[in-house]
Length: 177
Image 1 (cartoon, helix red, strand yellow):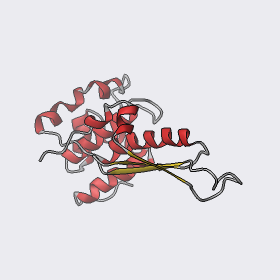
Image 2 (cartoon, one colour; image 1 turned 135 degrees about the vertical axis):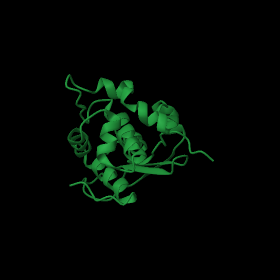
Image 3 (cartoon, helix red, strand yellow; image 1 turned 180 degrees about the horizontal axis):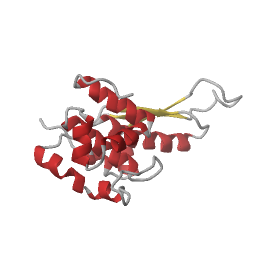
């Protein structure tokens, strides 16, 4: 059985994605003053189709925590789920429109964490890394960027860096430093 493509879930609206989740509200422990243990404001989202689970408990507002958890679920979809790329897809990945729009005039990949394109590009970059056996130079070549630029991009977010190193370990490669 072929696993669903990540886009099956990332293309959904917030309401559609939330409808697929089991939502638990609970009382979180920790600092927060007198009201902390009187309201069930922490939120846990379980997404059974993907097997992902995320929590948010920073705010005393359940609505804010639900919105935070939903953002975290979207990030987790890009970080944790890999789409298998065929050799043809790998050969044409550098022409991806989102990836092309994030390149500067010198062809370097420049996109910040706050940019809406960041997480979709992270998903694509990690897919390419998987398709190349986690070999950074081959992945960079497929993406049409330099090896240094790819490493800088991966290093731009702690969780992305961690995921890249997990992929490398799975393929018997040394961790990036």
